[in-house]
Length: 253
Image (cartoon, rainbow, N blue to C red; front, side, top):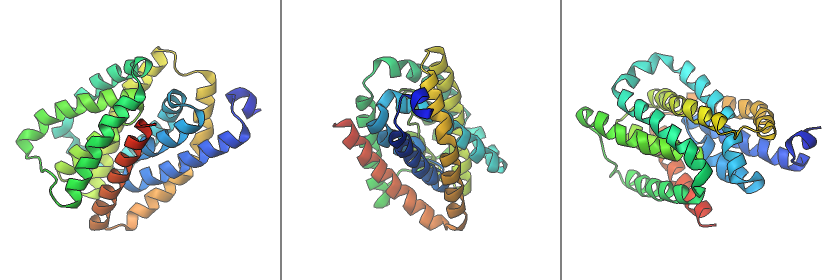
């Protein structure tokens, strides 16, 4: 039945579900990592455009859950309102870019930037943003992150770079970045719908992914609860480095 409705074999659906569960576990642990991990893995199985569109709804649901669980930290979003507003504008443009821009170009740019930042962070050379600069720089970050996120489904790298530079603790970081993802994803998904990208087979693939994603996300959330702030920072840096390398390698194919 699923094979007929999705146009994919049972083996393909199983691989897609497993990849989504793995990415969700990383998302639950770090607050980010679902699209950057899932998109390259699943794109190699069902194609880049289908992967980006099908992952949007499971990703949105995780961001809602994570933002709600960390709602006590929502006040930390107030200085980031310029970034969030720019993210909405960028996401609308990025949704259109998905229909015209080769995804590998965007992935290459993001991947290189992420690798450079991760290396700087590992050697304790990462920048710190003073409060007076956070707003203006946030506008640029929001626009670019929105454009890239709308086009590739991957918002995380630039937002992670920005939020680590403003120095949030692990719970604040997880809540704030999930709110930012949510703000970016709503216009992204609206754009996909308006452009007719949510075909029946893609929507069904999204639905199939939700149960394994929920399991992976819950496991990741449990891991974060016992992780110290120091370990969390190190894991975020390593995850950024690996995601950046992965994006560059995917872009070179």
